[in-house]
Amino acid sequence: MTDKDIETQTSQETEQDQEREQAQIIITWFQHVQEVVKEQFPEYEVDGQIGNNPTYGPMFAFTLKKDEKSTACGFFLNEIMRNFQTNPNAGLWLSSFFVDLLRSEESHLLPNPPQSEDEAKALLDKHIVPYCAATVREEFPDQKIYVDLELHEEHGPVLEAGFVAVEDGNNTCALPLQYLMTLYLLNRDPAEPLIQAMYRLYEENNLGQQ
Image 1 (cartoon, rainbow, N blue to C red):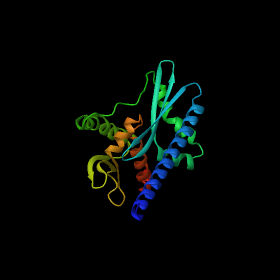
Image 2: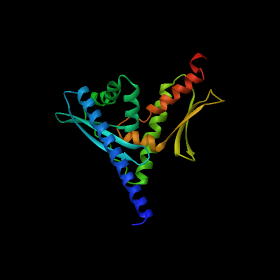
Image 3: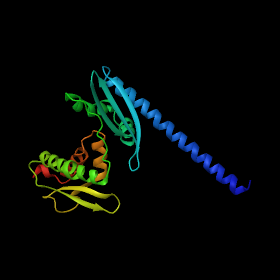
């Protein structure tokens, strides 16, 4: 075996060790979060699953079951880690996503992902984009809002929103359509991050004081 072979083998072993370590971290977080969900909803049976998004990384989904009703919601591991490390009420933050879904009489399983580009386009054009646009406008009834689709060189198609009254400086926010679609497929409100970004713009530009 040559030095180069040994180097290659060592490099592969190191890579495998890192992958195993990473997988263990994901499983540890998953088990921890599942326990938190069980504590928040003791009267429900809680199931969970781990997934991976090629763009947004590991994701967890949890299903609360009681009688004949099932309610599911999903999360990105990076947002879970960020909240559990910085938010003293991370358990409440986590449970808040289920509370609205649980108010409904019906089951809320995770939506089926679109099976083709045409299906994905129809879901975005007919549901997600109009819903986000309408929700943002409802949130700021005192402002003229523009919402438009743009193409970002790094993130691809994005949904852009802004306040017509703000002409200079930081006056728009944009989120990739793929991200909005992923939120929708996790039973999350795709308009929520857009509204949060718009509130930051609203405050930065002192629009409430005009």
